Length: 371
Image (cartoon, rainbow, N blue to C red; front, side):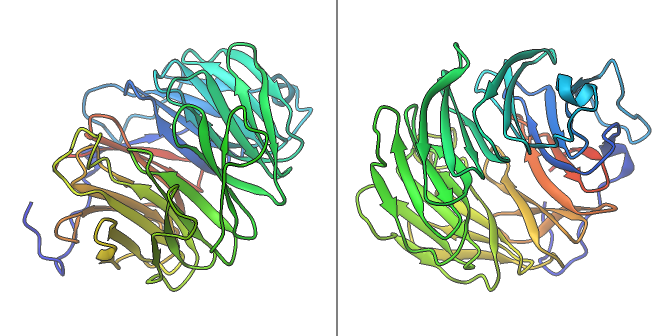
């Protein structure tokens, strides 16, 4: 699509939009199942939901309700004994199990049919980091209680608990037994199952580290922080490889492109996207250590960024109520949508022909992507 950088972006037509209604409070997170047809969402209303999204085109007149949605609600929430909002969720690599984390420190595993498989009870405070390893035999959770727990998925018991000097904000697996943990205060720790102490510490951030993310090969770790920087780390050295300082406010989110060595797009360069409270999205060429694109059309903090599966497009969602889809190569908006409230997350399905977004106004939207 040939659109000039300064031209009016193309709005999504209503025929390419499906609104999923049912949540009764803001929706924090959404994630497609790896197999593609299921979309999970997590909300302040103390539920997660699994929506069945067909392969056909969207239609804005359709409102998804049962039997096309499964409501995942703990027994305590069902009996109104708790106000345990769902803070985060993550699918395993096969799309057979969904893990959810909650404000009261509960980790739960559900099957794709919405049935509770296991209650994992060890944390005492809210959980904000939750990730399966690729093999699916371990689930990692990080909590405000200053611990990270590696769970044995079969037994539902902790395999190992790691304690840290401050609150755990985010976690990410490097491989099947090593992972990164980011903390309030600026520290990053690399831990390994079976080792009692961290195998590496990265210091350099001057404030809370909001996200950590390993590249597709597991060789480079990206981090972003309240100190407005994005940093790239390697296990081969103690100081960061790159210290990107072009953002002017909090950097809230980062995502690697599905490109480069070990991906399905090996001939494209490895890139990193970052979203900031300065209302910009930036794309970095990590190998060259330079800023590739600065995307400046948002008018509020950027909460989420996500590359398309082919690496050619980048979606972003913001407090300005807008979702933009950008051409990575050209740096222009190719499609846009203006909603009714903050957009907390954007995510592509595996085919790259649909994007899901979740909103502060209780809604989840799914868009057909025709690029």
